[in-house]
Image (cartoon, rainbow, N blue to C red):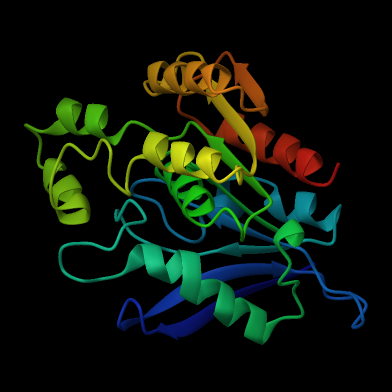
Length: 248
C-alpha cells in the first residue's frame, strides 16, 4: 500500500489543508478502487488513524483507498465563520479524490466512518446524502450534540459548539442525527449501519438511546459493544471489524 500526505487547496474551507491517503499501489488500472472516508474525533487530525491503529494493514486486505481529512473541532459543520467543513468533507473532498485517483464513483463502493466527533460526522454525512454512501460506521459516536453541550456549557469548549452550530439545541434540524435518520427512512434510503461503543464510555448512554431508536424504527444494523472506555484499543478493533462488514 502507498501512504501519502497530500496538501490541497479547498475552496469550501478557503484555505490550504492536508489529507492522508492510503492507496493500493499495484491496483489494476482497469479496476475502480473502493474508497472509505475515515474521520477523526474532537481535538484530532488527519494522522490520528495512521498513528493509533493498523488501518494501513487492514486496508491492504481489501485493496481499499482510505481518505483521512482534518476538520479541527468543527463537528463536521459549516460554522458561524462561513468555513464550510461539512461541505468540504461531504462534497468537495470526494470530487478531489475522484479526480486524483482511480476510485469508484458508485454508491456501493463508497463508505464513511469515524470515531467520536467523527462518528457523528460519518452519520451526518451518510444520512444527509444517503444516495452517495453504501455503508456508515460510527465508533463511540457523539450522536447527541445537545447533551454534550449541556455537559460542557460552562466550560471554554462550549464556544466550539456555538461556533459550529450557531444555536443550541439542534434537535429537529439538519444537524440532528435522529432528524436525518427519519428523513432517510421516509425516502427508504437508509444506508447500512455499523454502530459500536465501549460500555464504560461517557458516550455510552447516547449509544444505547440511538440503538433503541433504530430498533423502534425497524432499521437493520450491526451493533458492537465491548468493555472499555473512549479509547483507541477499541477503535482499532472496531475499524477492523467494520472493514470486514463493508466487504461482506
